[in-house]
Amino acid sequence: MNLESKQQKWIYAAALACLWASSEIILGSFLHNLKIPMRGTILASIGVAIMAATGYRFKLRGIYWRAGLLTAAMKTLSPSAVLLGPMLAITMQGLIMEVVVSGGGPRRVFFILGGALSITWNFVHLILGYWLYYGNDVIELYNNLVDYARKETGWSFVSGTALIVAFGSVYFIAGAIAGWMGTALRKPGISKPLNIPRKDKAIGPPVKKVIANLPDRSLLWFFLLPFMVASQLYMMMYLPVEVCFFAWAAAISMLIIRYRSSYKRLAKIRFWIVFLLLTVLSSLLLGPTLQEGLLIGLRMNMRAILFVLVLAALSFELRNEKLTRQVNKRMKNFLAVFETSFDTLPMVISILPPAATILKKPRESLSLFAGTFSVWVDSMYFRQLDSMPVVLITGEKGSGKSLLIQEKILPYLAEKQVDYSGIVMNYVFADDKHIGYKIRLLPGSEEKILVGPDVSDAQLTIGRYAFSASAFDAGTKHTTDLLSKSKLVVLDECGWLESYGLGWYTLMKEIRTRVVPLIVVVRPDLSSDFCQFWNVNPVKELAPDSSDEEVRVAVDGLMR
Image (cartoon, rainbow, N blue to C red; front, side):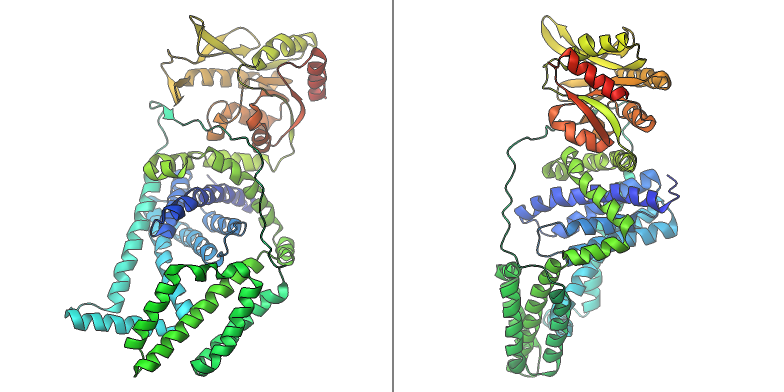
């Protein structure tokens, strides 16, 4: 795809960011609950695979750093107390992929290389994080520990640099595999039916959010925190640990009192295991005496505790409304795209497979991620346009929605001499048993079997239902050919299947692009998402038992 304008690139980046962020949300909690090691690397690899799959399939450039920035921005809406690290990692992954692909072109080798370097950044990020938390002392401790291991084992070939390169190679290979998986995907062939598990949208009582007793965000504290860190580091560098401890304790107390949730990371047993391990190793390997080594270890841990609390505090203060308003003024285009991405994210999550399925069938799941990319691009494009009027017909299965069309709406259209086209659906029975559906092409009486046991050209299967590709094609072609003459279109029905780019998606896209007034059947639980996805405005909502007067009012209102 040739992306000529910045606005187009932002729209494509927003669609990619929604897929990327949804993978983080769906898998993040799942992996966290299972305590899977290297969770960050797994999530980053899936993000790389999504970038490679969409970028290689659609030959895209200029969107990866934008997608990384949008995905990182969506992280600010997370309730997590730790934001800066993940936000930086996601932004850098998108930037690295952008640099590699823009430099070499959207070819497979560059997506693989970009993936490898993007995941390797996770390892670099890890090393930089340890250096930030513990300072230069941790480097000296690492070198001394390697020297000690070399002397004890007699392995003269072991060096600190070699170990870092070895561990970095693991990340590099993981990223290369993720990039290769993304580029190796093929578009599903029409000869092999797609198998999509149907996901009903759950409807239940609203969840009450419990908001903790948090302090008001303050710009004063936002600028005070870096000064606090700088002053504490200066004292730790030039004053004895025994002297600077009291100033450090005062600063830590202030942070814990103001940011009550920030100490949760300190409550984790893993933090204190590292604390004790560093203290013991420092006393043995650093300093000329055991006591001086112990003080160096204490200084390293004091620095780490300070950074843990300050970074959590900065993550909280980043959500300050005054900062947000300043960003909004300077980056209006970014804000508009970000809001569209945030509104789209729940719809993306609702149609994607659950975490267990993604991990069990990564190739199929990744293909689904990439396959819906252009769908979300279209949806975001439609939301840049003026809304289109529609009449919704909603009701439960078997409640008479199609009957309302055939017995009340179509006769009124004929009475008004309105040129219309479209599709109406009816049940197929055998021995008084419901076995499928057939469609009637409007106007006229031509029928096609859409769903049934005798379908020989199944486009996809959902449970026991097989959908005919030729029926979808026939209905789409018939209605599209008549659109230029039609004053109104009737479509029975549209909803969740079109979110995958299937069903009547091509027809709906044509209707939406030409802005033809539409009467459409939608399930009640999908009506809100349908209106948002296609950016349509319901002038009236009809029920299966709507009266003749209600039908007339709805049609007349739509035709105005």
